Amino acid sequence: MERLLFTTISVDELTTLIQESVRAELSRIEENKPSKLSSGELITIDDVVKLFRISKVTLHDWKKKGILPYYRISRRVYFKLSEINEVLEANRRNSTKQ
Image (cartoon, rainbow, N blue to C red; front, side, top):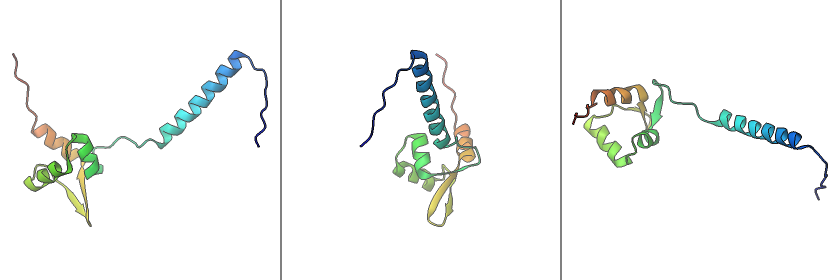
């Protein structure tokens, strides 16, 4: 059974302990956070689906129509983020002025 130890500390000491604990936890979370995608990085179907907020069926149609270039390595399909950005820029439409 765990023994409890009660002690008296000042409010400033308690504040410092809490701040240190929070900083340590935030640092741990930041270290485990995936890095942002670099433009030449290969991304998966799931990444593209999340990026565009589309279904996998829609993405498959875009692949068949040649809208998005892709790479197949073994049975896996990948996309280059830089090429996705190029497709977006090529299909950019300016809004009309009213």
